[in-house]
Amino acid sequence: VYFDKAYYLSPDMAGSNAYNLLLEAIRASGKIAIAKITIRSTSRLAAVRVIDNCLCMETMHFPDEIRPISNVPNLPEHVIVDKKELQIAQMLIDQLSEPFAPSQYQDDYRVAVTKAIEQKMSGKSVDVVDVPAPRANVLDLMAALQASLDQSGNVEQVKKGKKKKVKEIVS
Image (cartoon, rainbow, N blue to C red; front, side, top):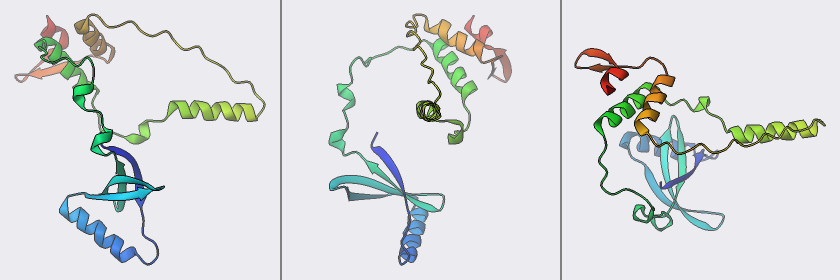
């Protein structure tokens, strides 16, 4: 919640020794550096950490800029979660989990805008697509979880050393 934008830092020609010293000291400590900086005459908080072999500075929000969770509307206070629903939700998370690979993601909006600009510049017409109607609220959470599991293939769970299909657990 505190982090805002990231910037890679590099030294000027005369600062490589100091840069490398700071980089190695931060890496060896396993900590991050917190600094108060000024960007465009605005005071900001920043964290400096090591990413690969580079210092990365991430600007941060001041605590008074962050909305307190107590001000978030409609948060349930005492929720009782159904064990079967929780078990299916956890299985769905386990099934869909994979290592994060940033290169698999793109800003679809920016790609579409860039494509539209290129089409316009080359004299072609730009296709306008209707926005689909919003989907109805999910009323049956258990059915929605089961449908998600069914969509993503044959799901199995290891329970007490034995594999059981999701439908066997839910029944």
